[in-house]
Length: 275
Image (cartoon, rainbow, N blue to C red; front, side):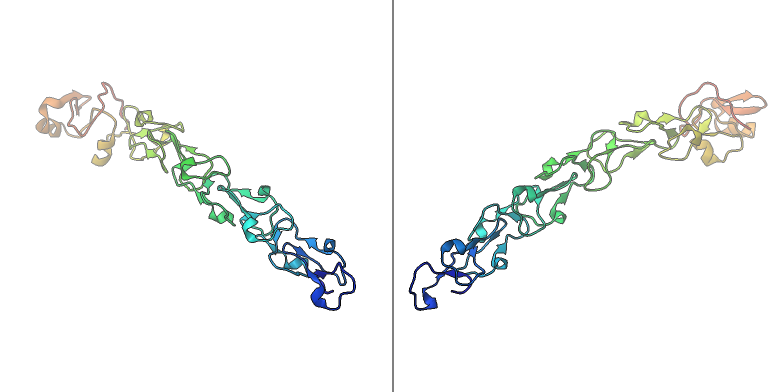
């Protein structure tokens, strides 16, 4: 009898009397005399035909599936890897061969064959576990934190010079000009500190008081408008007195504002100007 077949009887006159090995089995030898000569296809594979002569004719379960039984006869018995997992090699024999989608990712479909199929949590969200199955498993960053990239496992503190009071953001708000913030993870704008009296800064998102510059007598008008003071030294007395006579006061030979226009803010009673 040919490979893939066997014969248990005696006195047979034709190959047609040889019995084919059943589905899920194969047989490589010649002249086999019993059914035990038919070997079973291994776990991770199946075989649906009769009289198979080579183990290579046992078909491997495809990627994204596994199968732990022996002598399986159809692909329907190959089981799908569950949601949140994938399996990239054919012939897997156990559910533990299915790999988890990593942190920052999730997968809501069964039987996937590649990690590239795992979907990433969007910006402003994170996910620290593995094998997550739904987008709702991605959590929004809390106040004072952000994440600017997709697929992240953790949120970052808002950097010094920035803050945010909401949740689920991809970037933090910058402290406005004239302010600075040295700490990270701030949750509200009031955490930004004003430059001290007599100083100004045009930089937004400043992380140090070193950006605050001394207001000078010869500052340009645009710089003077940035000064965090309520007085303004004018080079000529008549200019002050003629424009805002009720707001002027003599000081060291010059006239200064004592109740300036609205473009100057933050009432400070005493200011030491630089030269």
